[in-house]
View 1: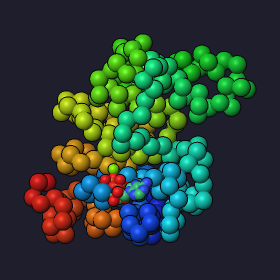
View 2: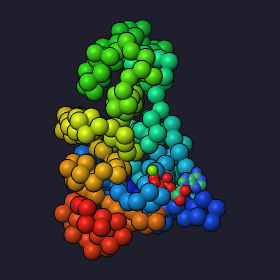
View 3: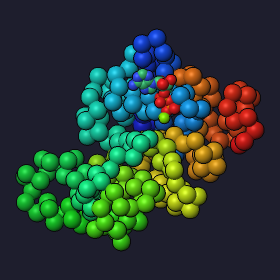
Amino acid sequence: MAEPILQTFNITKDFGKLRAVNQVNLDVKKGDIHAIIGPNGAGKSTFFNLITGYHKVTEGKVFYKGSEITPLPAYQRCQRGITRSFQITSIYPKLTVYESVLMGLLAHRRKTLTFFPSAKKFFKEEVWKILEDVGLANQANVLGESISHGDKKRLELAITLGTEPEILLLDEPTCGMSPEETESTMIFIRRLVNEKGLTILFTEHDMSVVFGIARRISVLHQGTLIADGTPEQVRNSEEVQRVYLGGVA
Ligand code: ADP
Ligand code: MG
């Protein structure tokens, strides 16, 4: 549990004159459930974009499993096992739930399909397994646009699982969900960590979710990391209380 799977060294992102992420040093440990919190505009999504390679860093370095990945494009980081979901749900509205997950698998493993004739059958089993894992098997034939908001987020998670992640970055995974949907998603995320040995890095605005599931919490404020530790340490940090939690945690 002690070894870091992901490390950032002084990563910084400027958008023109705005510094969205400021000199952030962060270690994410393998198998951890690690939350990044902070008010709107704190730089959480941008920080994720720097890790996944969606944005280039202005300064600093990113290491994954001991190797520097800062120069790598997003798709190469994804091939190595770094996968993200977006804050705004991005699913295929006109495909069925089953087809959406299959698309994700095929896109990730194009090569396997070419060289391995029985791959389609293999994928079929795998799609069903993922659908069962995320609790969408009973909606396999429903169009993406017709399922509930919570199920869309779950579908997005299912599509990302098809890329065989080792670390999953979830940007507000329960955004817009009902309390019941939030709870079942959180239980599912915990199961992924326990059963598949995944590492989860997530952002979330609902503090009850964060303190209910995270084992480690890092707090961003105006792009700067102001606290990093166990939920207990973060809850008791005076600076966090002052700038952010304001007594809600
Ligand atoms: P959070 O996810 O914590 O709400 P963001 O990372 O989305 O914060 O945004 C951090 C800051 O960077 C905000 O001030 C936002 O307006 C700005 N920002 C984010 N993305 C871009 C972009 N592509 N171009 C310019 N400014 C951006
Ligand atoms: Mg965001």
